[in-house]
Image 1: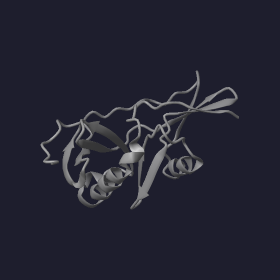
Image 2 (image 1 turned 90 degrees about the vertical axis):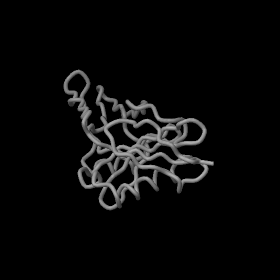
Image 3 (image 1 turned 135 degrees about the vertical axis):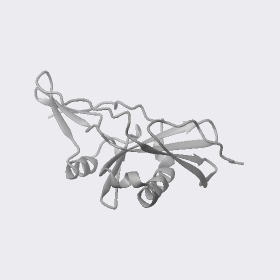
Image 4 (image 1 turned 180 degrees about the vertical axis):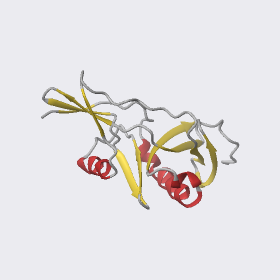
Length: 165
């Protein structure tokens, strides 16, 4: 059986691993302070650089399961995240181009029943987008993670004023 790891529907920044501290901090704050943490069990995390001073971490309840696609005798692991954190009975996942999908990640996704299967030319599950779904956006100063703002919205918010000096 052949596994082919393709890119995801979201193109991540080149190395979100260097922002793992920001991601973990945002997840901890999200679990403690956001009412959105009680609405879902699986959350998609996105990381975005905003210029030289600000890192954005976006946490949203996920509405679309990643696909494992069967194509004859091969399996294509399409859109599977490469990073996961389980915290307080919640699963948070994101994509890191520097890290391949591991069996541990697949095990965690299965544990939360969060992998869907498509059989090429026979069955493809529906693609769900919920434009009204609220998410938490965290904006951190790169030079001081303790300086941040949290904004709840259904899209990337305009970058807030942060005194990062």
